[in-house]
Amino acid sequence: MLTELTAGSVEDAERRRLSRPYAAVEAAALARPAALDALAALAPAERVKVIAEVKRSSPSRGQLAEIRDPAALASAYEQGGASAISVLTEERKFGGSLADLEAVRAAVSLPVLRKDFIATPYQVLEARAAGADLVLLIVAALEQPLLAELHTLILELGMTPLVETHSADELERAIDLGAALIGVNARNLSTFEMDKNLFGTLSERIPAGTIKVAESAVLSAADVAHYRAAGADVVLVGEALVTSDPIRTLSEFLAVPVRNQP
Ligand SMILES: O=P(O)(O)OC[C@@H](O)[C@@H](O)c1c[nH]c2ccccc12
Image (cartoon, rainbow, N blue to C red; front, side, top):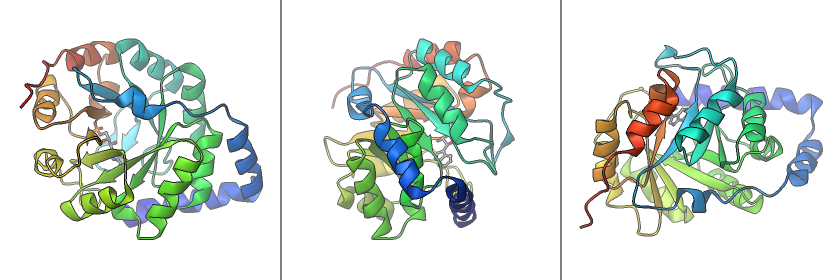
C-alpha cells in the first residue's frame, strides 16, 4: 500500500509538472516569504503540543469528514491552541490537495506541514511554493540516498523535515540523517495495523535534543496522556479533530497534565 500511495503521489506531481515545469515551481518556492520556524513552535514545553491535521479521508478509515472549508477548520485549530497545522495533500485516497495547503497557509500564522507521500525534489518545491513550512518524509518509503537528498533540500529551502518512522531500523536511519524532528507513526502504512505502544518502545532511543512526535491513534485525552507519559513532546491528530468540535477536543487534549520529570 505504501508503495502504491507513493507511486500515485509522484505520478500526480509529474502530471502537474507538465503545465508547471521545475524552474517555474522553483521560482515560486523562492518567491515565498521565508518559512516559519517550526522547531521553535514545536519545542518541548511544559504542556504537550498538538499538530492538528486537515484530513478528509484515509485508505484505512474511508471518509471521515466533508471539510468544505479547510481554511476555516485550520483557523479553528489555531484558535483552539494547536502549535502547527498538518494538511494532507494526497488526492487519491485522502482527498486532499495543494490548494487546501495554500488556503490554510493564507488563513493561519502557525507553521504548516505538507503531509503527503514525498519522493521527488519537485514535490518538495511544490510544498514550499504552496507555503509549507514543514514537509513529511516517510522513511519506509525512501531508500538512501534519496531520503538524505530530500532531507537536505527541505532544509536548504528553509523548511523543517518531519521524519516519520515505524520501526527501530527506520528510527536508526532518521537519527543518521541528523533529523531534529522525528515522528513515530502508530499506524503501519503498509498493513494499517495500529500499535499504540510503538512510540514508547522507540522513544527511548531518540537522542536528547530531538523533538518527538507521536502520530496517529490519538482519539482521546487518555491517548494524549499515554503518549505524553511515554515522552512525546508533540502529538499529531487527525481523525479525532475532524470528527468532533475541534476547539473543544483541542482544549481537552491540551489540558492533559504535565509529565513527571524523571
Ligand atoms: O487520523 P489520525 O489517526 O489522528 O492520524 C493522523 C496522522 O498521524 C495520519 O494521518 C498519518 C500519519 N502519517 C501519515 C503518512 C501519510 C498519511 C497520513 C499519515
